[in-house]
Amino acid sequence: QFNGGALYPRATETRDLRRLDGIWNFRRSPTDPEYGYRNGWYEQDLEKTGPIIPMPVPASYNDIGEDASLRDHVGLVWYDRRFHVPPWWSKMEQRVWLRFSSVHYAAQVWVNGKPVTYHEIGHLPFEVEVTDFVNYNSSNLLTVVVDNTLLSDTVPQGSIRDIFVGNTKIRQEQSYTFDFFNYAGIHRSVFLYTTPQAYIDDVIVNTDIQGLTGFVVYNVTYKSTISSTQCLIQLYDKNGTQVAGANDCAGLLELGNANFWWPYLMHPEPGYLYTLRASLLGPLGELIDTYSLKVGIRTVTWSNTTIYLNDKPIYLRGFGMHEDSDLRGKGWDPVLWVKNFNLIKWVGANVFRTSHYPYAEEIYQLADEQGIMIIDECPGVDTDIFTDALLEKHKQSLTELIRRDKNHPSVIMWSISNEPRSQNVKANAYFGNVVKHVKSMDLSRPVTIAIAQNYLIDKSGQHLDVICFNRYNGWYANTGSLLNIAAYVVDEATAWFRKHNKPVIMTEYGADTIAGLHMLPEYVWSEEYQVAVMSEHFKAFDRLRHAGFFSGEFIWNFADFKTAQTITRVGGNKKGIFTRARQPKASAHHLRARYLALAAAD
Ligand code: GCB
Image 1 (cartoon, protein in one colour):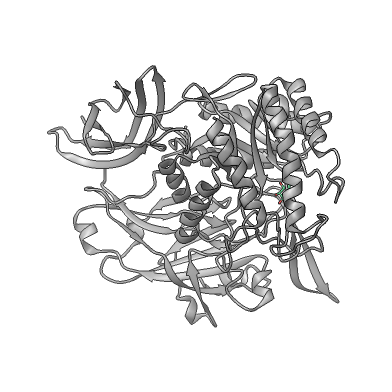
Image 2 (cartoon, protein in one colour; image 1 turned 180 degrees about the horizontal axis):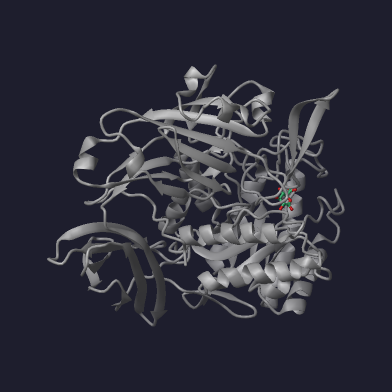
């Protein structure tokens, strides 16, 4: 069902791993996309083909140079590097795999001049077995061509315009309707890793609770030609003590007096994780393969008014975020993300939405450990022009997302789109189809869309479990006016509830703010105005909390981020309560006071 597993690569007693991160060679393709192919750039070192520049991996390539044409490049770029494969991997008859955690948007990969894989849709991992393509006694050439082009049938969508001088096409211009910058490149770690010949392909875990007892429903799938292989399942607590076990590849572990996974500030020990070790044994009980996975025991359930975690109603206090920072763009950066989590906790938030695409896997691991909940969003943003081709790709992005993130206790909801043009008649069947697809893979989490259309014309809400809506009162609507914000928010949330009889969340509200700009009386772009807009929303949220169906508030945005160039953005989107350098604006202190008070009252 998941089209093979996407287990995060780990070294274990039976598996080895090397990261191929570092500085790669990089060359932009000329406007003619065939040029590099015709000249065999994939079968020789790029440095032999012409001028190259050093390019860090992982990182976006856009902000590395001083050249606007690199930042704004549209089309193909080429990367390569050499790597060694330890000869002992061959002696141990290991399978060798190559895994890209994310390349945006599309990638084609060669090993030693031979094509090994192709992948489309950024922000999601792909892997390929390369055992038959690598040399063990000399170095190997790894070449990747990356295409950042977004079209009407990519997820997300965009469009391309050719720019001519006279009759000569000199370049292309990419446009898209979402506002975050379309950063591109090898955005996350590249792994070279091994598995034995017979190996564990996937581990699927679901959990349940009854009173003080926890249940872990697991299914280990493997590829093996050895007859009579068996599984050994061992569950360990945080101290490393085995607390349950089994000898079947699929089954149920029961744990009396279990430690449940609780969100941050909801329990003295949030984010409790067990370790599930799955092993594949040969006919004589010998170890063939082993893989360990963190498991949080928790349930997510929902009614027509409320979302429950471990049977307790939860109120979500959080952020929309972005993977975005100076220089690195969307490149995975552990420094940035450990800091982000520290700030999320400092503010007293308990959740964020991975707006508007899946984030790096390490981020979900941090969230699991720290008890931060996630609304996990696929890369469908501003979905428009609802064709069959787009629908297939949209569904594919969710197949790959769920295949990757299904086991994370932090993931409490799937978001299948942000601000689609859901007033379109075609949106009805389209999203009905997407939701059905998600439900065929996972029934354990609610499905939502962050809707921007008016509730009267939206055609997606009836398919969802939870209604999320985005609205910029006091910013895009009634710019500069604080009047009636609270009433508008209460009315809109109530109207959504009345229409659909489902829990309602406000997933975006906010105001652009230049850190350090102070104006009294409050005036757009000033720190005072951002704080005032928030205060008006807080009044609405407090009223709505008593109405019984309102399940959460997410300010837009956690931090300032880069956008395409427009006259409405000063150096990017400035709706962050933190600057892009992660320093607080007045709004961060204001939100912190509220979130900590809400947490204390919970
Ligand atoms: C929205 C979008 C978000 C934008 C935000 C804004 O509605 O969902 O991606 O960044 O508005 O600030 O314009």
